Length: 250
Ligand SMILES: Cc1cc2nc3c(=O)[nH]c(=O)nc-3n(C[C@H](O)[C@H](O)[C@H](O)COP(=O)(O)OP(=O)(O)OC[C@H]3O[C@@H](n4cnc5c(N)ncnc54)[C@H](O)[C@@H]3O)c2cc1C
Ligand code: FES
Image 1 (tube, rainbow, N blue to C red):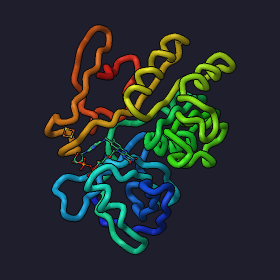
Image 2: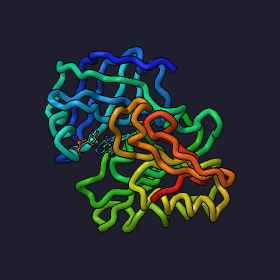
Image 3: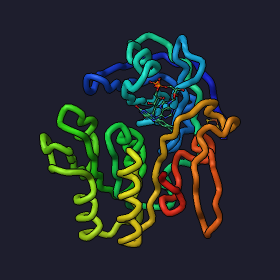
Image 4: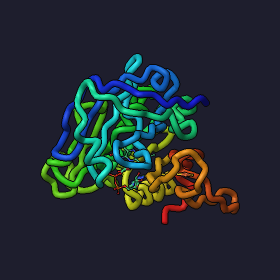
């Protein structure tokens, strides 16, 4: 797959919470090729390494990126405004979530792991979503998902608790082809365990710290075990989406 490096104009900007930013950038080549689950690497002025951000949505020639301020780089990135240009490299990653292979899926998002699932849902015939956040103040994009159950750890919004009980309820009630998930590792571990219990495939998107972002440094290698064979694929090139059964979530 071709990868493009472009200076892309920021078209629209919105703040979803105190620390979560929502931007649309004009990136025709990337928009044309992007698959759900893939990401872009963004150059941040003043920093050597690019920052990986998932493609949240594609609309004609534009892509949407939703990101949280976590450290210095994303804090600087949070200062962008419409009319600015971003140096964007992408689309990156493997073929992403298998939206062509499955027609129905349960999407499980934890916090800032939610954005890439929007792109997946847009490409699925039938889906339900379970989205978990720490509290009401952290809820993002809830109204943008079809058939969504929103959960908060402290009960300040939606279902009181994490994503697992609503997920199990869906697994008991209805037949879905697959679970697709993105979020913190403890959530992903529990989602994969439930998928095993109900004998349903799962695909998980991993967020490893990245350096080169291009498959060259092995800085993002993670462990997988498939048919008793251990390997260390790179999240940036061989992922970020992996078969839940194979990924070893340390
Ligand atoms: C495939 C992928 C998709 C992602 N999608 C999103 C998204 O859609 N929205 C969002 O808010 N965040 C996303 N992240 C996490 C985001 O990349 C990090 O929060 C960001 O790089 C942190 O940079 P920083 O400069 O603010 O933090 P710092 O801690 O100052 O960063 C220092 C270095 O560590 C790297 N780094 C730090 N945390 C991470 C991390 N979690 N993942 C990868 N590299 C990291 C940075 O790139 C930088 O090189 C994604 C990560 C990956 C791997
Ligand atoms: S970040 Fe260098 S190989 Fe993935």
